[in-house]
Amino acid sequence: MIPFSLRLIREHNRLYKAWMRLLWRLHGRQSPIVLMVHGFKPSKEDCKSAFEMTCGSFRKMLEYLVNDGWHAMTWAELLEMIDKRDWKNKCFYVTFDDVYDTVYTDAFPVLKQLDVPFTLFVSPDLVDKPGYITKEHLRALSWEPLCRIGCHGWQHKVFRNLSQDEMTEQCNKGNDWLQDELGVEVDSFAFPYGRIVEVSNNNRQQIQKFSYKMAFSALEGTLKASWFTGRWFLPRINMSEKFVERFTSGDFPRFKDCEGR
Image (cartoon, rainbow, N blue to C red; front, top):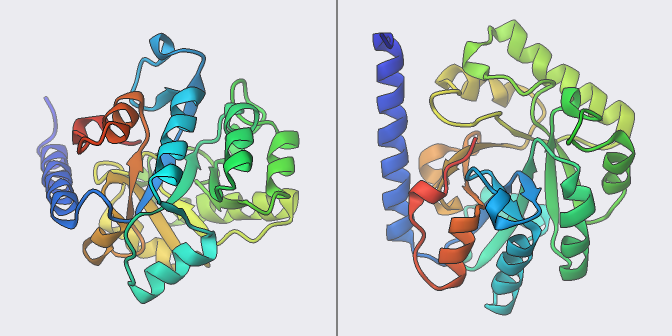
């Protein structure tokens, strides 16, 4: 039996998602968005989940946006838009969660060629593990002007299950490692998994006590919806094979294809 408290949390998550979907419809398809990417697979047949895509589809999406007149925001422009709540249409920003090594080997050449800024949300405990980015590649990316480094917690844990002290440790330990190993400023955060089910209201309040300038969720929505979410649970759009196919064909995406983790 599922505990009643968990049922309530899941229902809260369902209603929250439904509201965010409605807002995107109301705001329009050209509203400013932050894209969320995970790993890459060699072929579409290898993509077994909504968190996997081919690098070809990744390139297709970015080329479509650039050719359609979308502006690839810098980090400073993104921050200014959120600070001033000046929502300019047809603007996008790219983020990567967990950071698999394919971000360096496959995605970075595309981003470099198209001059698209991006942020890596890194869980240091995953660095150098099989499939994840190596410290060497992460350090090389951190030196790139297009790249910024954000924290994804020291470990990829469900924050709702953590005590206040444990959450503090996850953030501080993650920040310290990134700053010490890479010599970078860490001023943004993305919650692991990132749904209401995994992130409590207390988590969203506590994250404000750190030196971050904003924090991201994994719930689908445009930046215009930040009046609802606040800057400490900003919505993003998960890039998947189905999402890219529909978006680049001119259709409004079906949100079941846009869920993140």
